[in-house]
Image (cartoon, rainbow, N blue to C red; front, side, top):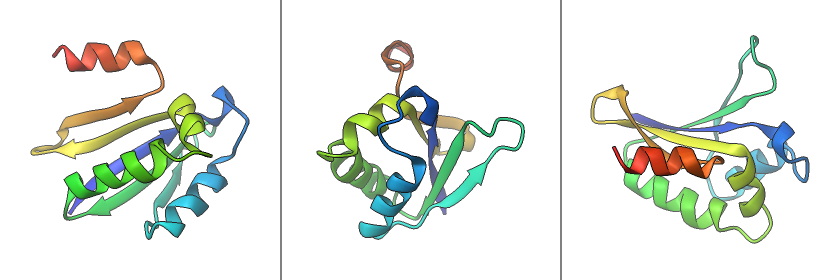
Length: 108
C-alpha cells in the first residue's frame, strides 16, 4: 500500500477550508486520513492510501486540481507528494504551490 499526501497551507488563501476539500474527496470515493501536526497546526495533511498510485494521481489531477470550484484554491495552498519505489526515501513531488519548487524538482 502506498500513500499520496496533500499538505494544505490554508492561510495562503481563505476562499475555502480544508473541510471543503475533505468533503469533495469523499464525493469522489476517497476518504483521507487527516493529520494535523501539533507543532505546526496551520498545516493539514490529508493522506490517501492506495495500491495504484498512478490511478490515484490521475484522479487527483482531474477531479481535484482541475475542479472548477476547488481546483485553483488547492493549487494555491497545497503540496502534493507520493511515495516512490523506496517509500518516502524517494518521494515524488506532484504539485507545489510555489512553482519554483516544481521547476527545481523537474530539473533533478
